[in-house]
Image 1 (cartoon, rainbow, N blue to C red):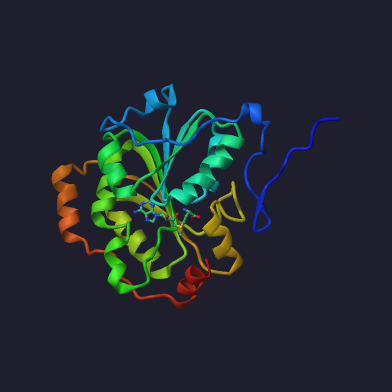
Image 2: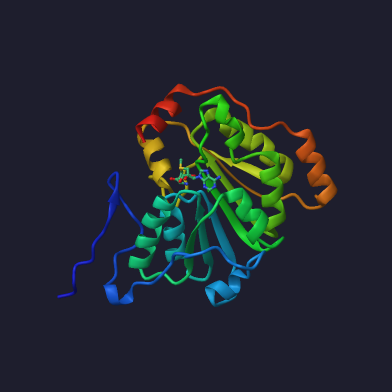
Amino acid sequence: MAPRRAIEREFGVPFPGEIQPPEHWTQTALKRLPAEEPADWNAIFGRAAPLVLDLGCGNGRYLIGSALWRPDRNHLGIDVLPVVIRYATRRANQRALANIRFGVCDADSFLTRFVAPGSVQEIHLYHPQPYHDEAEADQRLVTPRFLARVHRALAPEGELYLQTDHPGYGQYMLETAREFFEFQQRADKWPDAPKGRTRREIIALRRGLEIFRGVGRPRPGLDEAALEELCARLPPPRFALDRRVAELDRWE
Ligand SMILES: C[S@@+](CC[C@H](N)C(=O)[O-])C[C@H]1O[C@@H](n2cnc3c(N)ncnc32)[C@H](O)[C@@H]1O
């Protein structure tokens, strides 16, 4: 009889993949950030393959699922919080994945320091913190300057995926992203994960919150001068607090 494989669940939703026998486990943590800036990601992965980047990846649910169903791509998850990266790497190691790495870094400085222009195929950003306290508003990740960095990092046919359950942040993201990307809002759930691609999406869907999501490709012809002009002209993320989202964040 074949051995029973352990299936993990989060809020009742199976976590992608299965835990493999320990002798197959891999090492997916970047113990330290690369010495080279920008980094040579093909050398770090040991092969040349399109790079998928998840910024603020949390426990890695989306990226681990993607690494399993897209073995032909290299996957890189970044989060500023070491504890969530420990959860992500443990699960990726146990799934014996060789096409994924996780590192602890601030997303903005990661793009600036470690990513060569035009080198990334997909950048995913799911549920960046809205920072409800106005005094912390400067920490919001999605700004015109951040989107300019994403534009530089993506290959010409690359894709940016943005998602939040905060109405004010969602509206800001969609409006601002359209200036840099040919960006389409998407009303439907992701077909690969109708119960939610990420831990936060699962929780938000269970609470009945609206999800703002979309995908865009870099607008062609935006050179450095045009990107700088957008950064100077477009407003920073300022929006009204949302009581339901703030409550959910306190509960988390
Ligand atoms: C609300 S959680 C969402 C996590 C995951 N993307 C999801 O959808 O479940 C926001 C994540 O972004 C991370 N984060 C916040 N600021 C960040 C930054 N400047 N750079 C990288 N990660 C950041 C947090 O540590 C946290 O894991």
